[in-house]
Length: 529
Image (cartoon, rainbow, N blue to C red):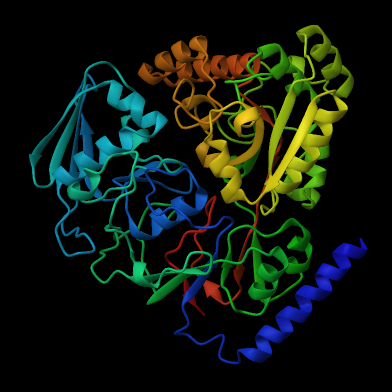
């Protein structure tokens, strides 16, 4: 409590200094300043699953199809799409007047090249491309996707809102090796990126794209008219959570993507700040513990089930420090509780969990005290406490846990290693996804990346067959049955361990209007009062 009080007084002092030092801070011509939850390090949204890279992508790129605030798919760069009677050929037509940032027109050829590059990286994209016979350019504004076998998620794939998003880029850039970053950042989105002004670890600068033509309809989630009312926007890097809160209160920044848990109550009491809880299950976040299936001990499914039994979500959620109205005590569905896809399939055996049950499973599994290297990112407001509590729970259950603490960027880099722990590998790491990345098996990272060379390297042949059936299914009721079966198999194989569900509130200066409510801050439609 004393530590929290000291943090609060530090925030108040910093806020007062910021206001005194910057009397013009509320000027109408000041840039829109946004603080992301993670550091922006990678600029190519096709090669990174980092949330900061996704936020960057929505600034400078655009998508053919976009998800609105109700989770429905609407044309964005497209004027229209249609399907043949057998749904084996899909035709797409671009809306007129689209231009890249360099002034060149957006063409169907650009879109086909972009889809190919995205489809080589994304789990859902790989499934769609495997079901595709060919993509054909009809004219400068029209192209078609002809399927080789039924695939029921063409629209959902092209409108995928989360990692990895199918952003469009010029064909010359889309020709870049999908494993390598593009050499230039040229999109058709509402902002242009000022690469020469980018100072990594400090700020990324954007200018309003004067060539951008917003759609006529109102902004709604990621869909509708992306009208920009600021000449300049900035992603501002502030790693210290207390300084983030102070900067928001003092008017130095306008938007904080993730409010640090210790400061939610304080900011809620500030009349100059609006703290927003993302709506619905798809606006919530779910932390997971990713287990490395490639090496001992978690190459043994029985030991993975012991780890699953050791994790008590209520204790982890309490450890986040979030107010009770922003957390669920327990959520066992991989699709996010309160979402349309939520199901209890495969959860009966998980209702009674704890250290005792986990120790019993460990003994039966033949655990031989193998070292568990748990990567712990200490600079993340959510992943830090989740990891700290999970490590303690695993130790209580009898796991020999070696905690490796570092910043998220270092953790993310080590997470890519497939080496055993003796040669710099890892055993477990905390990750988090918003509900929009979880709402069906085709976009959900804990299922869609099954057998897809994704860090953790889970590969379950039974789930693979279920996913293939789901991908081809067009009937809604049958899809729900298959989604339940996929979740059941997830809990049996323990691809990962669910650590809970929470709201990660966003905060805005109260003088901003036109805020579009979505799972993450939307950088358009905003203007000062």
